[in-house]
Image: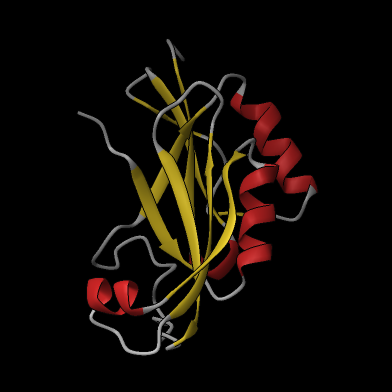
Length: 145
């Protein structure tokens, strides 16, 4: 058993896709349009038209599926980018040399919640914000002082 994919609904598919490609994701399934009776029945929504793209990492099974609905358009939660908001809060990506990743992302204008923190001497981590309030974590495991 495995997690097949995680879906994130966005307002701007191209912007979100570029954000995740900048983080090292690759396109695993080409961008495609979804619509029709099957989707209306599945989702419980009427007149559904959406576009999605699947992203992942090389040699990994779980995909991140980004989806933009053209109809019906959903609502934006104003507090979605708060870490204590109820619901799925963030995605974490394990990296090596976290400082290099942070430097690269800051140069591209990504906004971090804080500097890198060390948790119990075994994990370096930091949170940052992507498009549309998506929160991500970078995590490096090892032994740290």
